[in-house]
Length: 190
Image 1: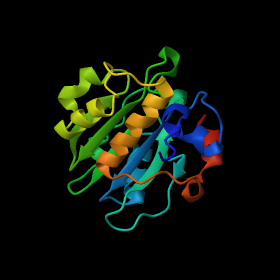
Image 2: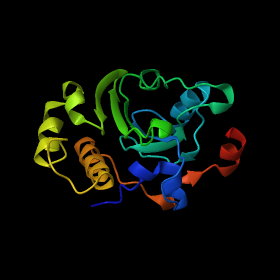
Image 3: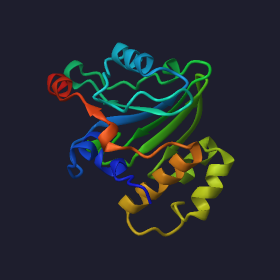
């Protein structure tokens, strides 16, 4: 299996080679929209890109990592990903640590053409089956990742479920070497 360890460590901790900590960042795959447009949309919502992948070729997926919250402004609102996803664009959003204080499991969202497509709550896929595409529901169940099935530990389940979602959407594996982290921006932001 490709390295999907970032789903329980957080994208920035994963990029830095750190173990799971206080990483409250979001990983966004995008295509059909330029990296600059995604970055500008996030900056407008006070969630500047902390890390970026290389410039994707047309039709390929790009990747950006941004903060989940703006603690300095007490802004804990949700990013408007629909507004970042115009006609012809697609976003896959992974939130590894939606609430560190309450230890909630990861969440994933998919948007296409400015519309919500599906979501996955890693805590309990039973509650989100109505939001999953039918093909993904059967894959989750067959892979034994349904909460009714057995899996060897939460971290293994998170990685396997992430791999399944990434494969379903055709998302490329993350490449540490291709990612650029803006350490100065992160230091100023927090």
